[in-house]
Length: 182
Image 1 (cartoon, rainbow, N blue to C red):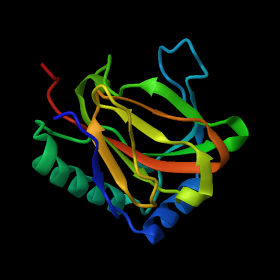
Image 2 (image 1 turned 90 degrees about the vertical axis):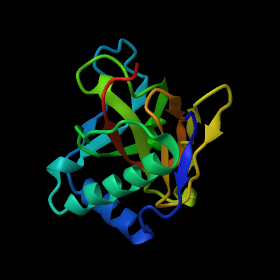
Image 3 (image 1 turned 60 degrees about the vertical axis):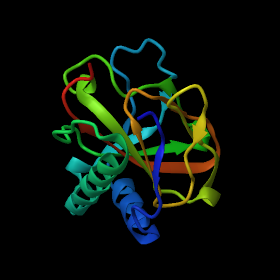
């Protein structure tokens, strides 16, 4: 089904703050897209949670949220989570953004991505701009900005994060994998 599924309060505000604090204490890397010629397609800093101690509970929660959403809405053949969850920070000082793209593509892992899950870690008042827009069909849908809300959509759906103009947008992203779409 081509949709944007919303799970309010997938994480509590306290859990979002804890994740943001844990990620901020880690060395981050600038997001780089393999094979992309346009180095300005994405401006964000990333922390991969597999490298962060005391975050095993996060993956447990993500698995639970994805399993329920898949059962209720998508009914995709899912087999694993083959990539680490990532915390992304999009700061206004660099007009952090991610242009239109899909999360499925070439490569062993990207070709098996079935669902994308993005959790809003920052509160709506913490930043301006930075809208997560998803285009699962002909119309553009805006993901909610409430802290702790998860947005789940097919990995092949076009989506973007508009430029942040004030503050910092923080999000948690993970992909559920399965057999390649046919």
